[in-house]
Structures are given as C-alpha cells and as structure tokens.
Length: 152
Image (cartoon, rainbow, N blue to C red; front, side, top):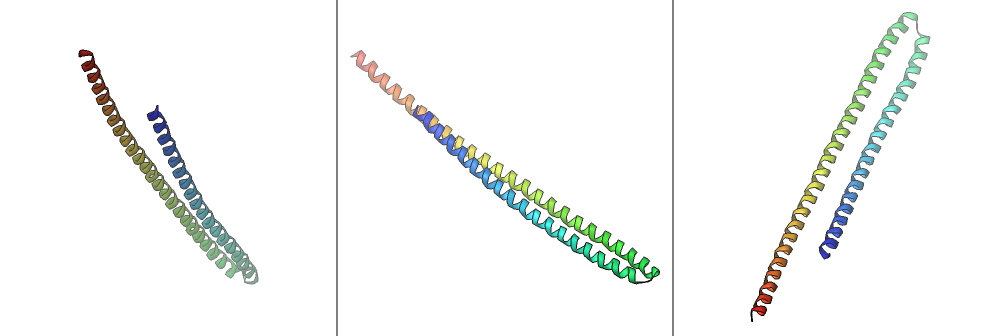
C-alpha cells in the first residue's frame, strides 16, 4: 500500500511536470505567434504605405501627359508586383521558419519528457525490484526462523 501511495505520488509529480512543460511550451508558441502577428502587421502597414504612395503616383500621373502616364503606370505596376512578391516571400519565409522552429521545439520537448519519464520509470522499477528482493529475503529469513523454532 505504501508503494501504491508512493507510485501515485510520483505519477502525480510526473503529470504536474508534464503539465508545466506543456504550459511553458504553450506560452512559447503564443509568444511566437504574437511575433508572427507583429511581423504580419508590419507588412500590412508597409502595404498600406505602398497604397498611399500609389495614390500619390496616380495623382502625379493625372498631371502628366498621356504618354508619360502610360510609361509611369507600367513602371508602377511592375514595381507593385515586385513589392508584393517580396512581401509575400518574406512573410512566407518567416512563417515557414517559425513553423520549423515550433516543430523542432515540440519534438525536443516531447523527447525530453519521454526521456524524463523513462528514467523515472527505470528508477522506480529498480527500486521496486530491490524492495521485492528485500521482502523476499526477509520472508525467507522469517520462514527459516519459524522452521527452526518448529524443529526444536
């Protein structure tokens, strides 16, 4: 019964440790997501600034001749496509990097938890085997004493 209580206590400790690690991992994930959201907000702000810049360019285009307007429009469209492609690439790269980082951290955390639990299990198993051996030895010794007493 003492072994069961000790085993249950250790199991509860392991569960608390695991819950703590999960909570810490969740906080880290939330922090990373927050960072991603901040980067996304920055990119959105840059897109908004680009849009404002585009409006200014359009106003200048109206003031220029049709021929120059066409050339500037084509240039502006080309530059817009370049900027959008760059922003999209940067966002995708940042997201991919964060995903990879999260996956690696998750794998490392799981491996650490598994190793921790395996080590505790091995230690507990050794302790139980030692206790069983001691109990068996004590039982054999008591049995021998009783046999000797009966023989007398």
